[in-house]
Length: 136
Image (cartoon, rainbow, N blue to C red):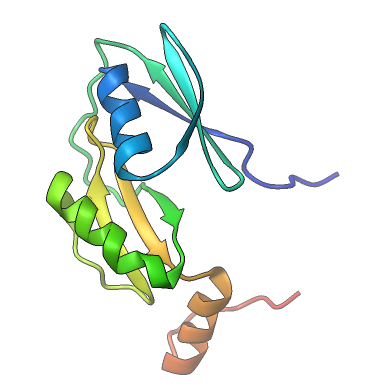
C-alpha cells in the first residue's frame, strides 16, 4: 500500500465570504459547494476546503511552511500581476522557476509557481547544489 497523493487541503478562515472571493475570483478556483460553515473549491486535482472559524487568527509565522499552486508558464505573469495588486507579498523568489509568494486574507502563506519537481531537480543538477537526488 502506498499514498497516492494529497487528497485535499483544509484552511481555517475567519471570513468565509472574503476567502471564497479570494480563491474563486482572484486565483480562479472553481467553487463546487458551499454551506454556512465552509466551502469546497477545486483547481485541477486539488480539492480545497475552507472551514469557517470566526475566532481564527493566523499567528505570525517565521517558518517556510506554505502551499504552492501550479500555473502554466504562459499564464504566470498575468496571474502574478493580479495577485500583486490584491495580496501582500511575504517572500522574494530565490528558487528555480517563476514563483510569487503571497498571503491570503487569513495570512496563510501561498505560492504561485510555474515549474515541476523535474525542472527543480534539473536545476540542482545543472548548478551543482549539494543535494542527494534519488532517481529510483
